[in-house]
Image (cartoon, rainbow, N blue to C red; front, side, top):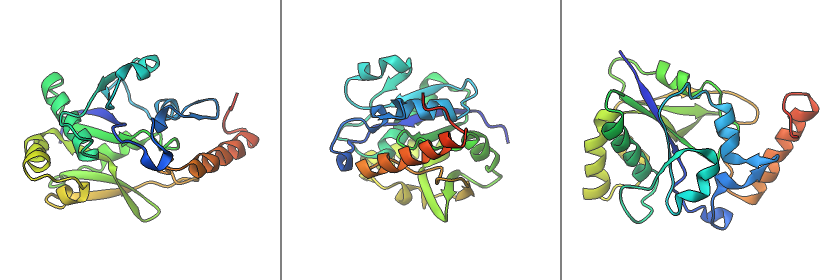
Length: 211
């Protein structure tokens, strides 16, 4: 199976549990959460797009292509995934798959993309990340060929939950391990405090530079 994957960074939510705003622009150990992700994950010069609604200029410092949802109304992660698939189909038509990942998880595995790709097999449509016996549906690899079916599901059927869509296909998981949980996401102020504790502990052990 020949796989060519572009990447979409999902940042289209409203961060209600954080009180609104952009979680990925909040500072953690001296740099925005989004920068932690860009520094950790090996994107290997793949096409890369940030899905974010609102004024794209707030991400100007990252020099990323920013695209809003292709449908209105903050329709959730499926809207972002659809946006990414349609972007690839229009501008990178030689790519077969899309990696999706959320931008509020600063401890992502460095081999996230490679392992998702390697887990695709004959008969498998979608691969999702798993850690600590928990699936993480937004961290996944999707075939661009599902674009039309997803558009119909989101727009015509009003589908909003990722699981409701992926249940229609052969969707498997691949396990990741790490301390802390590599998919720990920052939803509340307490999560930032906990993330900082992990980073400080790593710094004391010489594993990370917080300067």
